[in-house]
Image (cartoon, rainbow, N blue to C red; front, side, top):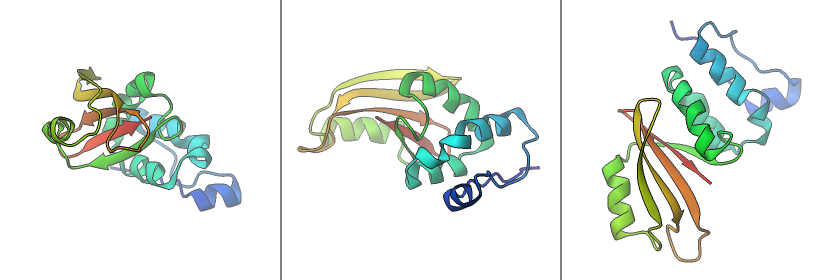
Length: 142
């Protein structure tokens, strides 16, 4: 049974409480603790991505935080259907500055880490971690 944990920014701001059912699994507890009080510091898109992330992905996300910092606070989070190969192709063919690329594995999940990249001229240089959860990829940009 999947228990919804909804962290509506408006409800958190209005009441100071996180709505939803109390977590019953370790992964749900991890989700609650990670989003928890940080919801007020996250951008709306990162918060939405984190809320929709499958519970089983949370241990991997928490481990990835060692690389990229607090999810949604120290970085921007997004979910995408682009594959790891799509990211590599974009790096080869489209990014203004390709930076460095490393294949990584976080908690048994394959991924890529790109450092010092610039997607388009005039944009800031940034770092990017992409983790492949099978049906979707999670990106962390900082």
